[in-house]
Structure formats: C-alpha cells, structure tokens
Amino acid sequence: MPFAVPNGTPARGHLVHPNPLVPHRADPQVHRHTDGHYYFTATHPDYDRIVLRRSRTLAGLATAAESVIWRAHPAGDMGAHIWAPELHHIDGAWYVYFAAAPADDEWAIRIWVLENTAADPFEGTWTEKGRIGTAWDTFSLDATTFTHRGTRYLAWAQQDPSLGGHNTVILLSAMADPWTLTGPQVRLSAPEYDWECRGHRVNEGPYVLKRHGRVFLTYSASATDHRYCLGLLTADADSDLLDPAAWTKSPVPVFTTSEAGGVYGPGHNAFTVAEDGETDVLIYHARSYREIDGEPLDDPNRHTRFQALGWNPDGTPRFGVPVADTAADTVKESA
View 1 (cartoon, rainbow, N blue to C red):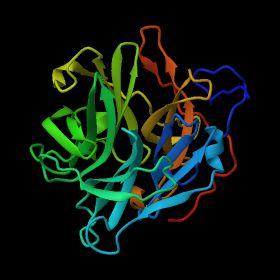
View 2 (view 1 turned 60 degrees about the vertical axis):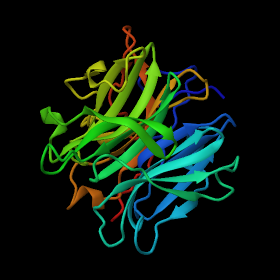
View 3 (view 1 turned 120 degrees about the vertical axis):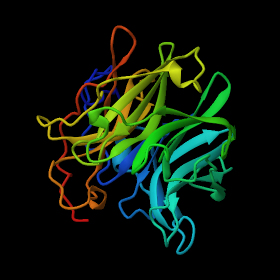
View 4 (view 1 turned 180 degrees about the vertical axis):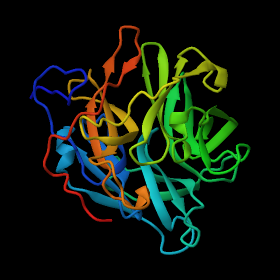
C-alpha cells in the first residue's frame, strides 16, 4: 500500500492516516526495527507502568494490542512517576530507558534502565539494570541514546544546581555500556529564551536525527500546556559532539501550538521513517484544546500524533505546523 503521512511533505502515496495516532499517550517514541515492525512506547497516564505496542505499519499502532512489560514497585525505588520510556536495540539486546521516583518521594525523579536479551521484546525477561549515575544527584529524566562515529551517547534532561530554582537543561555524555556513563557530562542547552521559560524554565525530551552531514537534536521547552514547543540544536557531523561550542541553537522554536488547527502544546518528540524507507516522520504529543483545569501533568489528554518531516534546500529540517485532528476518537477524558 502506498504511504503518506499527514501534511508537511507528502510521501509516495495519497493515503493520509488519522491523527491522533494513539490517544492518551504522552512522550511517545517509535522504533523501526530490522524485523520490519514499528515498536511504540509512551508515558501511560497512570504513571505506573511501561507499555509496548508493535505493528508492521505506523497506522497499525493505533489499534495494536498493548502489553505491559514492567510495573512500578509498590514501595521504594521506581515506585512513582514512571515517565517517558524509550526502547532501543543495542548489541543484540533490548533496553528501555525511563524516569522513576521512590514511592515515598515522587519528585526525586532519576533515570533507570531495563534490559531484555530475548530477540522479541514481548518475550523473555526484563531485568532492572539500575539507575544511571549522573554527576549531579538532581531531578533527571528523558534519556535517549544514539551512536555517532563509533561512540554511543546518552542525552537527557536534568536540573542544573548552578542555575538555582526549578529548571532542566540538556546534557550529553559518552557511554561505557548501555547503562553506564563515561567521560565528561556536558551541558548542551539551558533555558535562555523567553519561549523556553514560559511557566517553567525547561529544556527536556531530547531526540537525535542525523541527516545531510549534520546531527540535529530536538528538545521541548516551557510548561506542558499550550506553551510547550520544540527547540533545535545542530552540530556538524564531523565535530566533537561533547564540545558545547559545536552546537548551534535555534533562537526561535521550530514547532509550536497551532491555534488554527486546534493542536496545543506539541512536544516531546521522536523520529522514525515511513514504510517507504525514505520519508522522515515526526512523532510527538499534543492536546486538542487550550484550557486545562489544574496542573497540566494531571491532565491525561496528551495524544500521540505524527506527520511528515520536510527538508529545506539547505538540508535543515522543516517541521511545518501541527496538522489538525483527522479522527473522531479524541473525546476528552477526566484525569
């Protein structure tokens, strides 16, 4: 079947799949594996489990069966705020990076890792490899991993104690193995522009895409309401990624709320590739309304969406605007 993703740059067909793709799933990630499947994970609105779906098509993730692969501990570490899982296949094993807090201290959030050596991540045993040790023992979350020029890296968000108050910045480190950092941990970006500091001073949710001789790192900024948006860092592929000076930061957000389309607070994105093997696809979450009653994190209506990622003539990504909902399954639910 020919494939096309919603708006942006059409792919090789004219079939447009409905958005949202998966209702009530925030912080989405899609991994396209060598077995021909798309694997999907995201924050569950109960914040107490890690779930997986898989399908041979992106659209199929909407109705794919969902499996719980791990649950929060009833007490102690990893007992609360299970957030932003990411699934990665590294050296023949599966790993899930996620944020969790102790059951009795739910804001003491740190980064943890699960491992499964089975060929099929829905089979085998998920082993807790432990917490990733960072230089600062502070609020940390949203870990993602990638390789570049033979080195594996971890990028994540963490509170920088030197900035004072509540904040998160984007950090990068090389890895000795899939659960251990090595060498310097460098800060690539901190909230500095007005659009990064609305409601909260936030840089979080990093994700990497390598294209056209450059490394692009997206991140999310500001509070998790209609002000949430995407920023972009860019480095030359031949540069030292651990040198903060190698990265250029866009002075404006690259993906923001669309009042016209009724899509609010787009952010915490990932990238994948369409079934044609060529079209880059932006995965993200957003709400279908602007006004939120109470704390945004208590509102479960951040839905997973997707659309084609375009490219400018200079080889930089063109995000466009969030496409309007095309499905009728976005009924607002109570928290």
